Image (cartoon, rainbow, N blue to C red):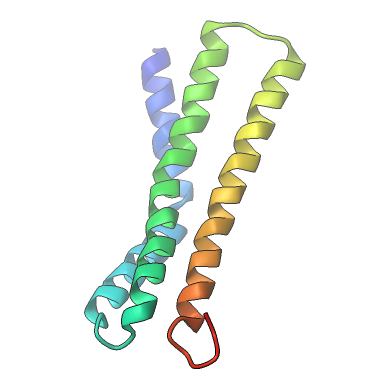
Length: 114
């Protein structure tokens, strides 16, 4: 019962990320099809979209994992809140890294820039 519930929670988490996942997949496809147009930007673009795609699966998986850990090891409210806060900050930093990579891709190879 618990495993089914966690699986459903994971699927719902991935479903909530579908808009980001679709845009990132399209970004990868566009980057790969226009590979020769901007060679210095392609790596940064693929890195940014790749991080975004990976996060679409890792964020829900980590939330389900922490929730399962909490169900197996009852803890006080402060510990649970701290665990989710640290996790949220970590994922936010990685999401920001994907945006930074995309920003670098925009300016890569232009004269007078990165």
